[in-house]
Image (cartoon, rainbow, N blue to C red; front, side, top):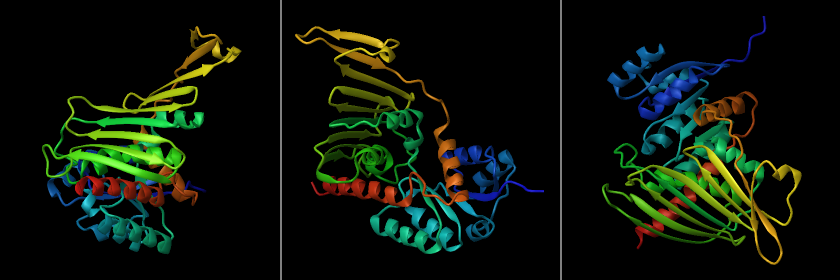
Length: 327
């Protein structure tokens, strides 16, 4: 009897986000959850009972019995755990950012190449239905504006807001434009924590596109929006609500435009603004990226958000942080 390939995946860190990883993993075909590990014994036993999965008393024991692991621990521990996992022959999924610094990230890339294992990093917005719809349009923006705001939460304050929130938009933008950057200007303020809580950055690319990014974790309301301005086109993407809207300026109306909202511009030469709001496939982005991780392992292919792209995003984020720190 031929059975589908089975992959044994362990979860390291079962706090707030690790719980969500486990919740999705137990529903995915082709895998088996090998077990969980966390330094918080009370928490790990509670989660074990909820999902009926094995608790490992040591990290090494979990790694020995796993083909891959999902690392959902505080950022300062990412390198040490991922390094050990790769040494034990495990593929690794690491929640963003990949590490705290470039040296550790580059060492992990070497580890992965040496062990011939996959690193995927949890830049989850790449799997957001609204961003997937945006990619199909293949925009050529000349100006980008992004706001990623969140109410204060003590969880996640182990890193500055640039590495906590803004890195999502950095990753999205370099996935669209590449990492050929001409100049960076940045400002930030420590408000309630010991690291930067609100930051604004202006990034100029060599293709003449400018990106203006704002990230804050002391906002009253949550916002995850990006606006992209191109010649004869404007797009707005709401990552939170999973909505994409597009406005296109056209000289003529085609049959395919008739189902969309049309606004006539009364200039000497008549033009039209066509409004479109593509329908979204409302899939869970976390589940999608975990499935992508599993498929990448089983089919031996490079993940969309691999260690290299995550290291590029980290590099830019750390440059922004350095600019702010040196002011």
